[in-house]
Each structure stands twice: as C-alpha cells, then as structure tokens.
Amino acid sequence: MEMTPYQLANNTPLTLTPKFTLPKAERPNLSEVLPSDSIPIIDLNDHDIDDGQGPSPLVSKISQACEEYGFFHIINHGVPKELCQKVLVVASEFFQLPPEERAQYLSKDHRKQVKVFSYYRKYEGIGKVTMWSETFSHPWHPTEDFTHLLPTNPPQYREVFAEYARAIGVLFDRLLSLISRGLGLDEDCLKRRIGEKPGLNTQANYYPVCPDPELTMGLPDHNDLGSITVLLQVEGVTGLQVIKDGKWLTVDPVPDAFVINLADQTQVLSNGKFKSVRHRAVTNKLLPRLSLGMFYNPNYDTVIGPIEDLIDEKHPPKYRKYSFKEYMEEFYRQEGKRRVIEAFELPRTLRTCFCFLKNKIK
Ligand code: OGA
Ligand code: NI
Image (cartoon, rainbow, N blue to C red; front, side, top):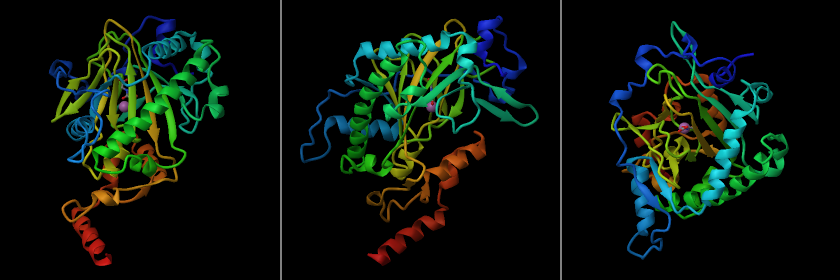
C-alpha cells in the first residue's frame, strides 16, 4: 500500500525522502514570497442595492476583486462561526484516525466519489514526486445520495458535514448572483450557465508538519477547474499562496473569513474579464495545517463558453465552446503539466472572425 506523508507520520518519524523532494526549479523559494496585505476583504453586509446609476457598492467591490485578483476574503458571510469550527474539528479528527482506518478510502481512481489520496507531479528524469499532504474528497450535495458513503468515525462527521453543506449552498447562490451582477448580467445568469445538477465536491487538505518546507510542496501550483471555490482554513497557520503580477503572495487566514477564488469556468464564461488565479499551498515547519475547499463545478454534459452578452466587436470570444467533460479529459491528459484553459483558447485570427459572423447573422 502506498503511504501518504501523514500515514508515515503515524508510523515512523517524518522524513523527507526523495519521493517528496521536488527538483530544484520547482521548489517554492519561500524567501521570495511577499506578504499579502493587499488581498481584498469584502464584507457581505455592505450596501447592496443597485441605485439605477450602476451596481451597488458591494457588487462593485466584488467585480473589482474578480478582475484584479480573482481571489478575495469574505466576512459576514452568514455561515455561523461555530459551524465552521465544528466542520474543521471533524475533518481534523478524520485525519487523526489510525492509518488503517483511512486506508479504506485510499484510491487513485478519479471516478471514485469518496476517496483519500495525495497529489503528485511528474517530472522528466525524476518521475513522480508526491506532495506533502493528504486529501479527503467527497461530494457535498445532494446529501441523500452520498451521506451513507461518508465516514461513521468521527461520529459527528455526517451530521456536521450535512449542516455545513446546507449553509455553503446558500452562500454559493449569493456569491454566484453577486458575481453575475458584477459582470452586468442578470443575477441568475452564471448559475444558469453552470447548469443543472452541478458537480459539488469538497476537499479537505491536511498538511502535516514538514521538516523542510523549502524542498517540497503541500499542493503544487494549480488553477481550480470549476466555477468558484469557497475555502475555509484553520486560523493561525499559513500555507496558501497566490500569484499576482508574476509574484507569489501569502494568503494569511483572516479570522471568521472564507477565501473565495475564481476558477477556470468563471474565467471562460466571463470571456477572460474575471480571472482564475494560480495558487499553491506550501508546508509549515512548526504546525500542521488543514483547509477545506468547497467546489461548484458544471456537470460533465454542460456546454461552457463565453456568455454571448459579454461578446461584441471590442470583446471577441477568447475561448471556444466545449463540454465540461472535454475540459476534465484535457486536465487528466495533462497531468498538471500546463494550464488546461489554454487548450480551449481560440487563435486570435478566429476571434475577430466570430464577431464578423455574429454581425452578419444579426
Ligand atoms: C485546493 C486548494 C489550498 C489550501 O484545495 O484546491 O487550493 O490552502 N487548497 O489548502
Ligand atoms: Ni485550489
């Protein structure tokens, strides 16, 4: 059976074997990472009534954050603090279970709904390097379809998770509507375009204490693939970083906040106006870290492409239409080697051609 770093942690002292060691060019270079004072913190209680002149102050702030960063914190989001704490406790208890107990979920099959695994990257000449983390992933909705597949240990896992999922469902609706309005669209537009029966998955990431964070990575740099991600991180332990203007910034946890990051499908639907941002998680020498991401993806049959209302001669379509299944197949094909989204970009010559045709048809 393959060991993840955390399973190693339960059995033997942690060592950074070559299996977890990144080639030099891929290491995090932590001394060059900048503090992130500038990442917007948006208060969802801000004034939110459009006044006829333009969008509400809240919508303006959201759309500015989506354009400039693709990443922001939200506070006063309506999900009770106690519930956030409870869900982090059950997730963390899950990772404290004996390795044999978690091993029943170990799987490399991406079609499996409930699974424990560790991310890896393949490098030429070296092969696979495993990341210094363990991930537990499963669907978060509709609860009646999957609750029976979730752990019965820790005993509160199912109940707490179901309550958290309900609250996050409400939050996703609000966020999708604010982001839609931020694009100048009807409030239900984005949700409609992401489609019926979305793929709603969660991922708890556990990063054990790492003897040398310079040599490895918790999660390699990546873009989330769905529409938006709501991330909860334990307070007081840093690890998440985003790229801004070519530099890595740390996204330190903000008390009682969620990190919201836009993912690839929002970038495509908004025709590149809103950014899906590359991010990664580095490890910590002193403390273990836990984060819980909630994802909102289209289902495999949904066709995604730039929303027509956002396209005109000045803004020709940057991406072609595709089914989300195609997008995911491209993702698995690439095995993390480059940006999936680039495979769906339209060549520049074709972009203007589309607009020309659109005008002809009108
Ligand atoms: C993710 C992710 C970051 C973190 O799960 O997609 O980016 O801070 N997590 O754990
Ligand atoms: Ni991510």
